[in-house]
Picture: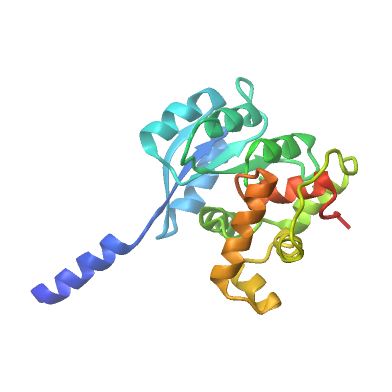
Length: 228
């Protein structure tokens, strides 16, 4: 290999961004299975493990993962409280993907409400797990929108008043709730991607939402979007 080729390879390696993942689950077998699936990918890497929510914050500070796979039910501090503590007062927190055994678990709704960006069934196929981690790392679309809609459909109707949105913002919010990316929303509405990003930011600000998932939950709770 020539020096020029070596330099190009080195530059490519430096520009290749690996998504760091922290596994939080009280079952060692579950963590081991997830590690095997994730570490087999060139763009993903498990940076650490925890068996209880109490260890999440110190590990995040030390390891700075991009994504936390968080079990909902743990014997000490559960995933809901761990997620709440992780996101409180953290200007740049990692994305949280909740792990659950049952799709319609009320604990999942509570975790999403406090800031988790999505949820994943423990029995999910490896390709679903990998897609979920990559999707949540980019934050450009709602993870498994049909499952989130089904979960929210079991909740009471509008429980609070919503903010006033422009007609365009309401259109963007409805499409965002279906899981479309900014580029896909732009295509539907014949807008530029940057224009869509501006509308998404405005919707998040008006709803007081940290991310797209919280925006959709707020939209359902205020009646701006209906689960059906």
